[in-house]
Length: 633
Ligand code: 0RA
Image 1 (cartoon, rainbow, N blue to C red):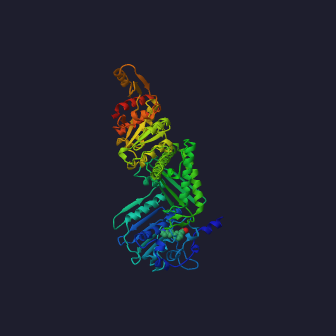
Image 2: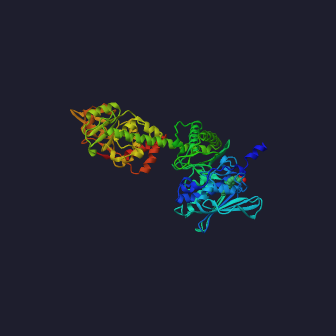
Image 3: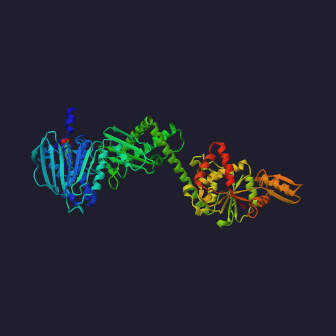
């Protein structure tokens, strides 16, 4: 056991020398991405990443980054210090080999280092090769060692320049980027600061100090709360739906998985993946595993604890989420265009199972947060499904305009908007009569089976699935809700033709609610009407008189005198086509009630009252509404 442990310790002999540094200078972008601004800042990250590795090894608590007056950059850490012992074969101090050879270092056999951060794992030697001058100072074993370099080559042997406390260890690297390589030598505070902040969030407790002697910019980062503080910071301009972020951290074999989640009221989905503090912008197996688990846990909770039967998809589960998934992984494989996609296939399942288990447990223990989140997701699903239905209807309309309107619609021949009318008819028999009665040129008939869905009470997705509503929407042509397009209106007037009884008025109210909710523009633009069929027919001799109210009936009887035959129409279906035309459809003789809504906001409340359970307010509304309605003959 002791023997085994010893083997894993770092010593100069464990350094594997792979090649010299010539390749770095001939193809710098292969190592640092570019020789522009990005590449320049990358040099700083390479050294900082090495220092962060020391932190990950439990050996470093503070990193200081200093932009000096002469534009050089100093990175100082209190890690173990680059080893300085003699290499048994090369007969040189480890430090010289580590700085002047590519892929040299204890890191590359993954023993001395648990995890390694640097993007290419080449770190300090790349910086040395691309710097006109670099000075490394190491505190180790109570001594201070130093060596300087010029474009990757030592300019002196490693020498001891002083003594220090045995406890004091660390590395200080100062470098002068080579102006024959880089197109700019200007360090930008904002670029470095945002990355350093990120590193501080990802390494709870690590202190990072930044100072630029040229711009005088100074920052200090230390986040005891780590990822929890990270998501809160990411959400600082948003409204969170739960103030306490979800957090869990699990170790599986040598892999550490840390996750923080906070949902906001917004719609964006922001999931940030990091592997060994590298931002995996292109995603990868860790993010995939996370998404799968998130959708599963939320679906399970919705089903079991909220008894919801709404099908929740991944996009719904992620609406408004801000999440950070950070992995500490021994042998990361980076793929993709910018090498920022995690490729390790085994990671997907590991992250999936950790997130499934830990998130489900968090939901168990924090039911109020769980409910807030799951309800938000359910709403997202309903909205998505409603939007899709609306889009589909619009698309269907597109297909319709090339010929096929709903089979039930008896369309008119005129295409002149202002002239045409759509009659929405209650019941098949009334529709039958009105089809015979109509003027085909400008009057279209759409029969409604019976009561349409109460849109006030129904879920949005039910509304869009409803056949009657879909028929109506197709015939009108505008689409509905978010996708409403006035330009596609197919008729100048839309006329509800219902029986003059309780059922008829209920259907009218349902239709109105629908128009108000989903096509309010049609009401505003005075396109919606109610037909006013007569209540009675009075026959005197061979002459017929139609009356539209009980009051009118009394007056007419008084006027006409005796010997009258009075017939009460129980419904539209009782009239023959000629009667229907004469009384209700002929523009020269009929009466139409224009539907207006003075105050949309007030009306919305009224509609809610109306369609709610309470019967009294509903009755009151109907009476009030009838009074308000204008008469337009
Ligand atoms: C090689 C091996 C060890 C540490 C380092 C390099 C190292 C490099 C840099 C660069 C900046 N700061 C650094 N700190 C450490 C392992 C050392 C050990 O096991 O004692």
